[in-house]
Structures are given as C-alpha cells and as structure tokens.
Image (tube, rainbow, N blue to C red; front, side):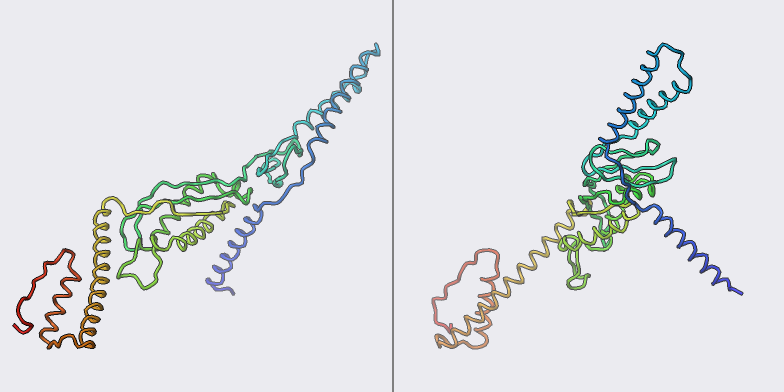
Length: 319
C-alpha cells in the first residue's frame, strides 16, 4: 500500500514529466521547404497547359465531354493552388508552418520558397533587437531608492516557443526585463559603505559583475519564450531625486575625510623626517617640551587649509 506522501510524490513527478514533454513538443524543429522557382515554373506550366488544352477542345467544333472540361479546369486550379504555396524569406527571417493548428516546423531558408498551400505560414524576424528600458525607481540592498535603466540586445532563438509558449513575446520581454532589473537592484548596494563586507560588489563600482549577473537573470527569465540575450548593460544609475542631495553631501563628506587622512599622514611623515634630520645633523638640541611645540606648529602649518602667518622669534632659543 502506498502512503499519502508516496502518492503525492508520484503525482508531482508525473506532473513534471508532462510539463517537460509539453516543452519538448513545442521545441523548434526545421522544415525542408522546396525551391520556389521550380514550383512557380510548374504552376505556370499547368495553368498555361490547361488553358491551351481547354481552348483546343473548344476549337474542335464538337460538344466537349463534361469529364474533359472538368479535367482541364482541375489542371488550371491545381496550377493556381501551387502558386499559392509560394512565400519569400529575407535574411534572418523564419516562417512557422502549421497545418490546421498543428505545428509542422520552421523554415529558415532564404529567398523564394514553396510549402504545402494548406500550411499556415507566419513570418518572424530573427534579427537582433534593442530594448532600452526607461529609468525605474527601485530600492537597492540597503533600501535606498535609486533610479536604474538598461539597454538589452536580444533576438528570437526558438521560434516555436516565442509564438506558441507565450501570448506576446515582445510584451513578455518588456515585462520580464523590468522585473529582472528590480530584482537585480535589490541584490546590490548602490555604493560602498561601512555596513558592507570588504570587496562586496556594488552597482556603481562593479559594473562588469552586475552586467554579467543581469545577463544571466534575463536569460533565465527569457528561456521560456525562446529568447536569447546577446548583451545587457546599465545605461542609467543614480540616487532617486528625494535623497540625491543627502547622498551627495554624504559622498562629499567621505571624500573630505579621505583627503584629510592623506594630508595628516603626509604631515606626520614630514614632521618625523624634520625631527630626525635635526637630531642627526645636531643643528639644535630640543627637549621634549620644545619638540612638542615644534610638532604642533608644523602640523598646523601642513594640515591647515588656509595660509598661516608665521611668528618670528627675535629672542634666544630659550626665551
């Protein structure tokens, strides 16, 4: 006796198998069409031959048999029917062929082609297309509102999936591209900060990594429609207007702090070299108190962002 869990698992497996079989049934396969020039010649030959035979029959001056007239009409109609099976494909263009709703294959040949006149022929462009998404307002990993936009280059790879697996593959691409951008932005912070681990990728600093992640995200979303992503790059990245000024001041403050650190580090190195040079050359002997005063004065001069006014000591060193 099977348990409830086993029955549920078997039902789920059967459902997955049916889904996979359905996907395989909709996968694209080729259709070998016939050269259209040969068929157009055959069609015209049948039409002209049928007309000539019909005229010859009338010129005999006798009452023609009904069967003979019908035969000539059938030949002419067959020639016209052959001509209706002609269609033309441009480079990077395909035709999906179906018979009474059943998919029969995709023809990717170029030029004048011929297929069964009863086939329904739907042409589809295989050229690369560009989707330039408008800037979207989304939240980054920190929850800060940012504006993000991207340019996506895509093309139809599986024609049968693009037509039969989704309702409108162009609208599908637009909607899924927006969803992918929103999901991508939530995975990364806009820029570096103390709350991030060292070396963590950000939207602003890790453009290449973010672009690769976006291409993979789009590929996973587009595969159901048979769409291939050739390239994807961010074209717009900025803080949202409501916090742009605050974040600009934050960036300016970080830049000032970083510059001050470098200035102080350089000033300390210069003071150290000055004291070491005076000591080694024995130019003047300074006690700890006067060394501290000298260090203080030198740091004020070197670190100040304004011109300093020197005070000249006209007395002795010890006055």
